[in-house]
Image 1 (tube, helix red, strand yellow):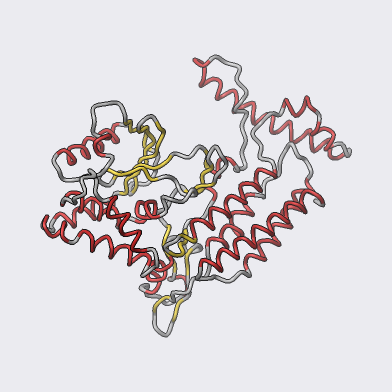
Image 2: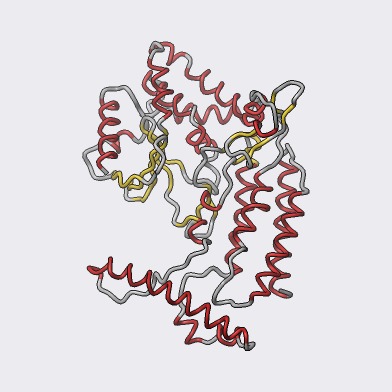
Length: 417
């Protein structure tokens, strides 16, 4: 909290001195209680993430420390040059990311307006330096580009390098993880909350052991289903356990998110960081991407790969080596631009097996989970044979095909497994 207060004071001092700008600056630096910066949530020094409130809503504040480096480089440019080159700088950044896409001019126009921090329809040197520096960072740039999508967290604005996004209610890795707790078992008054947490933790472990042992014993005598359906036992073991149906619903929404984000109107994009922890779930069960630091437009991603020197395929990746990679052209000593995998492959072959791997203690049908896992492996094999494509139409067709197969899997699991 001390660090966040210092960072905010520094930011507001720079804003009041006219060095940085942004539509959030007046609220962040106001003496009124419309803004609150909470605790630091990040564990890496290069990017600070805070929870907080803005205009009565819970939000997440982020700042990538590399913004300061970008901003510092622009400090040596004369004010008049910053202002005169503003439109060209925005246009060049869009072209570098998306090439000459059919809707790129509309994107440039939208970004030019976002750079006008105070909304007075003129660009100052402070606004130009602040915004162009922000556009050099992948996440804030892609958040602004994809802000119309319902599958990315809403981007609310910025002040200097600090920007605010929507706080999503749940993280998929927490919801569909292997652990479960007795979070609804409350026997102590609120003042004894620490004791309640200790009690819940110990009780959860004990009940997990007793529950699994009881169901295993019942299974040996052929009564597992009967025991699991017993109202008293079901009530006694009242825990947050994800039904198969909920997992399939999440999987459907995850494919919808992959389709929506990967096929933007400005061209194909790819997330080089696909895992359960990077997806949030809203109260309306909509899946949203949480971290876009490694979200790249295809044009830009392929350019990055082409610029890489290589001696083997292991040198040809962006982000994590298993997510966005190509192969090495050893005759030229550079990486090829053709991608070896897409988000659809990572979701189908990586996320789905993890999502459906854990058995449910209150649905003690071990053969069912084995059946489900076997069917999901077949789906993963099918996905592995889907080629990487470079048009929105082809990618849409592939994703919808996988979604159709996934729905068939659910019917099979419900009727046969």
